[in-house]
Length: 187
Image 1 (tube, one colour):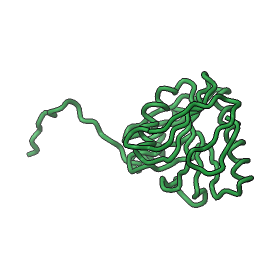
Image 2 (image 1 turned 90 degrees about the horizontal axis):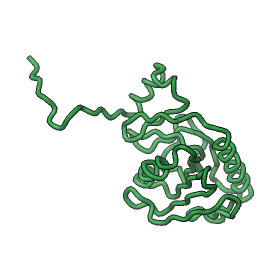
Image 3 (image 1 turned 135 degrees about the vertical axis):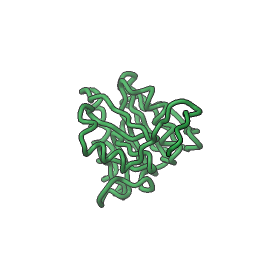
Image 4 (image 1 turned 90 degrees about the vertical axis):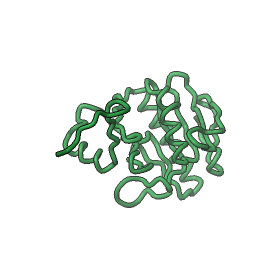
């Protein structure tokens, strides 16, 4: 007979792995959400994108793509691609610069040079929980395009769950990567 004991610290919280998350996704569990991500074993639903968000993302993508081509860089800018940070973290950043765009499956962590998130209603989440997540997994540089304030929050030098170096660059001014040599775009 199985002994049932009360949980000592409150309700049981189950942390999903990527394979669990993918099974749920394939079964249609997230069909009512525009987009979901797996963050620290939790399913996080995202809002649908509005035009300012989409236009900001496309402008940044165009600028990054064109600059990387001019530089003859081995990095490629990709929009909204699944990226594996760990067994409990599968994110889909708005933009990512990777050295491994080819292949099957998700973008591997070790290939990520820069992550860009565009934020309007999600600014607190992007600057808080997402920044801590990316720093904890060693993403070298992280940008958050703040649609409302018309600035890019640029972060680099990850230590623990934070980025040591930060600056804000207004839209329309030159933004220079702190970790990728010669990468400069109009913010």
